[in-house]
Image (cartoon, rainbow, N blue to C red; front, side):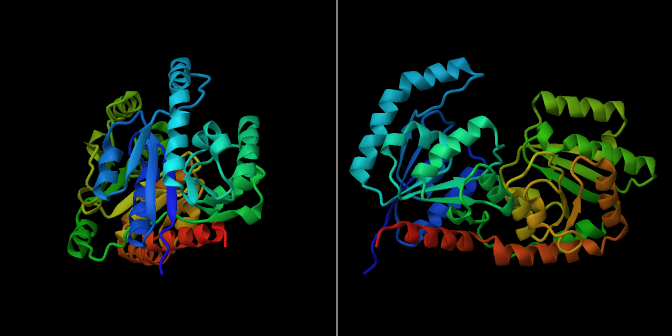
Length: 378
């Protein structure tokens, strides 16, 4: 007889980012494996995550469980005003649902609900937390309550170790996405053989994403009389940083080599119209969903060596890796593919093979199921 294990997820959901996306894949697969699931999500949200939970038929509660923000006093005040109700609401949810396991996707909820947390708790870290005094104190408290920590990469495992989490409690579980069975091969081939090669940079238009490094790399290519390419920027560019980039591009007379397509929700519309994806991150990427999505679609990738990126992309085997923040190194990688276009499908195919082998949502879910089973009392 299959026992329906109950898992209560605590996840932000203010808007849908990489964390929410990968958690949706996990929830869907767990549901298919017979798990009984419920979620507590942030009461301050834009409504998108709620709709996606409805689509996979996972019940949820909206709770205004906030945090104490030193630099945002109004947010802190709002959190404190709503805290008593949020705490007792969560207490009632736990009492009613009687979960076998708590699964936390951020430390805020753990700390704010500390007296309610039982030892059968899983905590997944999806971002780089520096070993500051604040984080060390928080993770010392977490270590007393959390049975198992999951890290989305070896890089994040090291982060947890620097925060004094014992290695035996840490499990590396890479992000996973559904396997894509069919690819538009003819389209990709046409993009590679065309006179203009299209490089894409995808995601939030923000300084830490490295757009400025890409701009300087393009400047160097043009200076070296290499101009048979275009950079297409996907993401909401209607912000101060985006406007600053456009101004620099205009001043440098590089507008011909940049195209701004704004935010596009359809993954197919993005990935089916490019051959090479560039991820020039300046921050310590935990486990980039953009990289995994591009890999699964057999796209050649040029990525910085920050965070978990080199774990996903092995230089010259399934993509190219450059030194983060080094525009000369990035321009060299771009030039390499411009001058050796036959390498693009080779790198893309190797990337896809690795993605299907190591970064499927099924593999991710299977690892979590193993962790859940070990967490449950015999």
